[in-house]
Image (cartoon, rainbow, N blue to C red; front, top):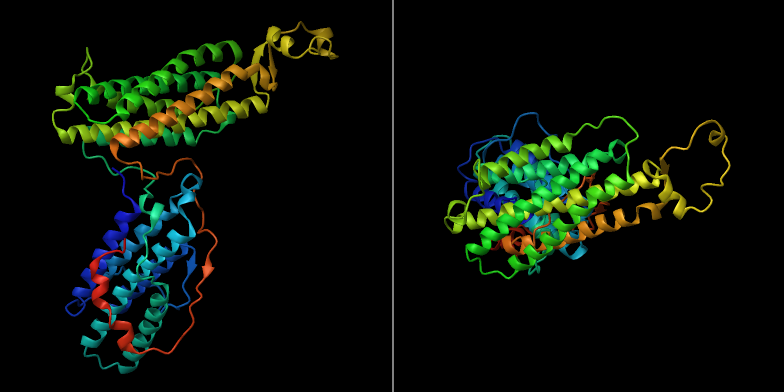
Length: 449
């Protein structure tokens, strides 16, 4: 349900082939189209940690590039935007070997566009000989550098292939809408600062996770009844039940170890979850009962869709559990949580004897604030275990949906600028036009794998 980097490279390759095949008949503005393509390729290379040495032929025009070159420029730009949407959770995919292979593919695609521009330039009967000569020289310079970055026989782009968009594609039915709402539910939790979280929010988050786990258990049962021949279904059910048991204990710990200081929360995650819950109820149940497998999974396509929904729900749930765990750790560290005075006295022997003028004037409250981590050891242990169980469930759901190679970014942090960019080591070397254009046919075979 999510677009991957491999998909966008494949689209860009196809658009480059179209631009090459239509080079003679295309009557759109050549300079604007080529400049848009080069600008998009340069931006794409920067996210692959490479800075092209070739200069632009002309300044970027305010006029929108049309025709095959404009389409190709937008495809290359979409690939760069996907790279820009990644964060620390997927940064491990940016290994040097895979970056070199990705640069080779982008260089090959851009070189096809440059050759198309040369072919188009040769077919024009322009009286401006000087402009044609300068543009041809520029294209040759660019091709020289692109050829330097091409690596014939590259083993492939590795983990970069599975980099996915931050959000799923636009919904077209109830199931895809659930996937988008699950991603929105996760993103609202990501955007919540721990300082604004109250204990009622923590209890609400636990209830949200318990509800998602319950619906996922129902989906697991439906997939099992549908005869899905995957052992991971049993593993998924086991860890979901373990996670569900933890969510039964956590609310009790939140009532006996935490008390609000006062104030109001924005409850944005709760509102997002209400939308998700309504969509799940509309799909999996009617007003009185949960629907059976014949109603939810009538064919193979429905089984695949249900697997995708399960995958995205688990992906969102494990992130929400991580956010909850980090929020509790932050609140404990900053002494924002309350515990019963008697419990603190058991763990802090000096509590009752510690001097303080307030003890002489006011009676001691029954709840006291503390940042003593041992007062919350059971709560933090359960939340850590919950996150672990949900992460195992997410891996099992990926196995069922066939998305184990998919790397979806999560979390609020995103790259604000390209990572460390290395200048191109390309240097001008004498070459002939025949050497540059002799292997055009090899570019039409598709991306190297």
